[in-house]
Structures are given as C-alpha cells and as structure tokens.
Length: 257
Image (tube, rainbow, N blue to C red; front, side):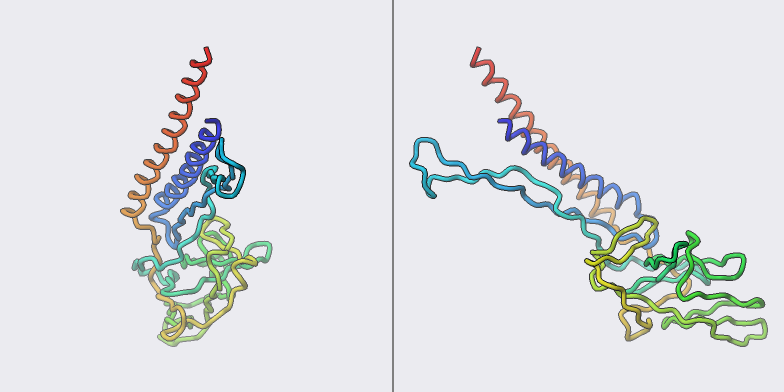
C-alpha cells in the first residue's frame, strides 16, 4: 500500500508539471513569436516479484510498475499567424529561420521576434536592446526603410533615391527542439540543437521576411483548455489512488486491533 501511495504521488507530481506548462502556454498566447510547449510522459521502472505459493521461475514472476514521470517538454516551432503592424522595423519570418542577435557579452542568440527599433545612434536593435546581426545603421536623412522578402535593407532618402545599407541573413537550426530557452523569446544553440546555418531568405529559401508584420504565438487556446481539463482529470485519478491506498491502510491497521 505504501507503494501505491508513491505511484499516486508520482502521477500528481507529473500532472502538476503538465499544468504548469499549459499555464505558461496560455499566459503567452499574446506574446509575439512564442512557441508552445508540450509535456511528454514516461512510465517509471518496473519491479519483478514472484507470486506467493508458486515455484520461483520465470513463469511465476509478475511485473509491477512504479508510477509515471515527465520525460521531456518539447517546443513546437510551428508557424504562428502573421499580424500586420505597419511599422517599418517590424519583421516576421514566414517558414523556417531565426533572427540573430548579439548580447552585451558578445554571445550570439536567436529569436523569431522581429520587433526592432533604433537606438540614439541609429543602430537597429531588438526590443530588449540587443544588437541586430548584421550590424545595421540607418543613415541620417532617411525618409523610409524598405526591407524586401529576401532580406535586402534599403534606405529611401527624401528625393526618393534608394541606398542599400544591409542584407539580413536568417539562421536555420538543425534541431530547434534542442535549443536552450533563455527567456524573452531568446534561444541559444546547444550540442543537441546543432550549429546555426545562415541562409538568404526569399521565395525559394526555407524562410522569407515580411516587413510591417509580426509573428503571433502559435498557441491554440481551445486545444490548451482541453489539455487543462484532461490534466485536471488525470490529477484527480492519481489523488484518488492515494486516498484509496490510505483507506486500505487504515482498514488493515484497524484489523490488527
């Protein structure tokens, strides 16, 4: 019966982690570029026990499970809806790819969020103040910024003349699920994700850029609410296992009296 208590507790703990993940998805439903997480479960080790009163051999052995655990939390990098903003420095990626950014300590990180701005010196930076790669400075006297789907950045002057001031590369990750999430929709490559490979965006590339758009979260609220209900029911079943084991334990103790 003590084993049953731990089995039920393992189920409750696993479903708590599942609810935590679902809650994070729902809370970030309006976060640009957010990629939903999914919990995957696995059964714990099995124990072999011999049936009482039978000879000890393979035929008399029975396997008993010891519970459940969260095996992994995967990230779904599926495409989010593109939302028009009309801001010149807003860019959304359609297809695969990440924008590259440089942190203050010189490390390269990656993001799907294309909400960029200018610092006081005219350098393009992310919303959190990180340097955009490639380093791009908008020249003085620029009336309009034009960014093509293949990543060419043009500064349009007052007289209508265009000047190419940069070219954006997107970066493809061999295994995005292996990226290390840093928070703030920033990711860092790991051994599991593989190194990022730069490519020029465009019509025939893995991804292309849309100026004046932002990618929304790919969380489906109806799906997540259904997941909440299933997690709650699974938690109730596991807690019922604990309650039942406790009642049986109480009955056994009373018999001894």
